[in-house]
Image (cartoon, rainbow over all chains, first blue to last red; front, side, top):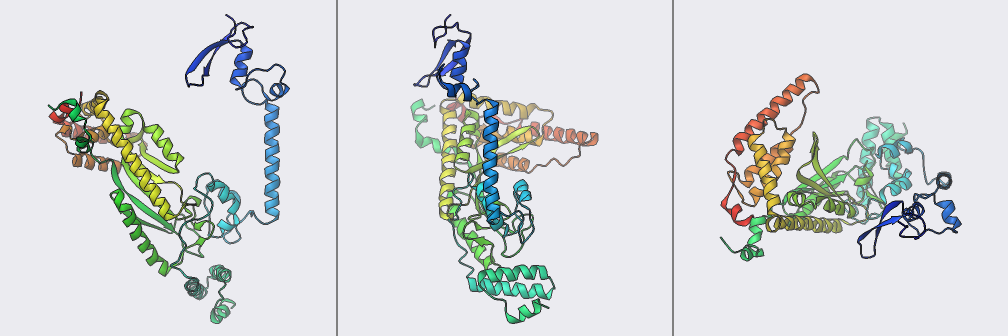
Length: 192
Length: 286
């Protein structure tokens, strides 16, 4: 029996082809036509691109695949290096010391500042799973900034009283970020 | 006996197919304090239960009251881009998670469960069944939950949850209707097999029992069985859902497991000895 596609070579194998109406058709074809059909394109003898990029099973030949992987890895590495140099990506959270590698492995963050330090990784991680990468929900209206500063100042005083200077430094930095300034008394106590 | 056409009228079906698909749910709000390191889990997980789709919004209102009481005492970690911050990136944004328990036995029996679960994933919802001891998605009771909370407002998330849960309930009701109208033999087969096992088994693990009880619950909900009510089936299911295998992996543990399974089997034999299809079933099925 002759191949039902090229009508020249002898049919050696069976392939199933989907027709436009969705029905599946059984075709008896030669090996070359079967390979071309599996690769998803009609067989063209004189198509050099197909000959180079297609090893016959629908995938590019291994050396092309390796080359592509290496190129993608290189481009990604360059982009990451650039981001690191510009300070967009940090290897360690400056506040809690959580390492970026640890975050990439366990998916957990150590403190609110990790969100800033690893923002690019978090965005990459969340983008396919969330509705968007920008918060659209409510803002904490119940905590006006003034109250927030007063709250932090109270926490700062308590931390200093307990001689927990590490925590006190963290709170002071947060206060500075919010534009508040630790009260004089606290500041003096903290510097003791 | 009523003529077939009359039996199929929708007016009569609501009580037949029952509305016991949705077994209620919960709303969770994850919050963490500002200026402090995160712990192992979210510092606060505020929760509010709801029992019907109409309760989702009131439950959220009550949740926000709890939240504002807490916010008065302690400001939350928040940033304009990611919203409320958490040790888990998946809990950021609104920090709101809405979940519901749904009994999807009808969809399972007619074989439509996998595409429904895939569709849920596509709309960023998750579904988790109870899988243990080789029994996968036991009882076909699924915990369906919102899987994303960033890039969406609370209002929008609640509306999506309402729509998705309502759609799931409708799909399950349609499946139950199909079971009665077109696939009654399939339905009878699953329930009769379950009853046969419950009446004659010699060893039954808690998770097998959970799985087998599921079609029986469905038949009880539809009022097709004598000797068991929906409430009793629910109580039995709930007891098994909380089952834990804390027995050791040792010959002693195996012996204790066998003793436990034997006791469950004996109980089931006794409890289901008088459970039978009733006249209503004969009227509506085959």
